[in-house]
Amino acid sequence: METKIALLMDLPEGKLPGFYAQIVKALAGKTQLFDRDKEMLIVSTIEEERSVLSVMEQYNVKTERMELLYLPDHAELTDQFEDYGFISRSEHPYLYKKLAQLVRIEAISPQSERKLALLQLDEHLLACYEEGQTEIFAFDRQLQELVAGIAKAYKCEAQFLL
Image (cartoon, rainbow, N blue to C red; front, top):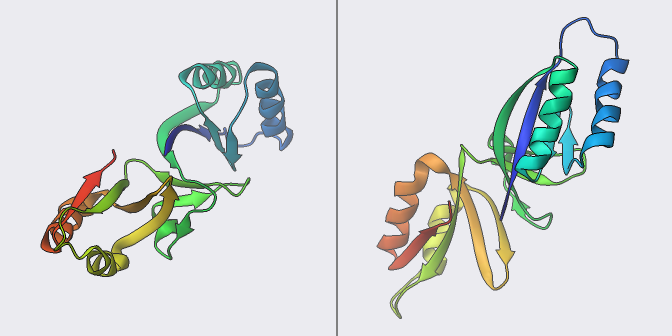
């Protein structure tokens, strides 16, 4: 799981269509964007964020910062995913970090019923993917207690990653 920094540009009204292109060109000379989606610029580091912000200041464009969870391209996304994230122009899936929680559900005893726990949690699932030998599940951050309770009821442990 990687965290990325998204900078949402608030482009001024009434600017010519070439204004956005000028910004993109200026950015190309200053920093490496990891990804972008419409008016959202996505970077990997604080240094890249600073470079983007200096260009935004030069063009007098306000930005709003948010953190994203960059999911692997092979992640399985559910129908609820679009309420908590998006797929970028480069077809990379992201979740809004403030809305989502990543978790591992682990069997902790021979009596654990992990498959049943996962079956009950399935209706709340946003996305899942494998990382090494481990399955990672994404849920609404507000459901953390519910996820932990269901895991416990089936003698499993919910290991929250954020």
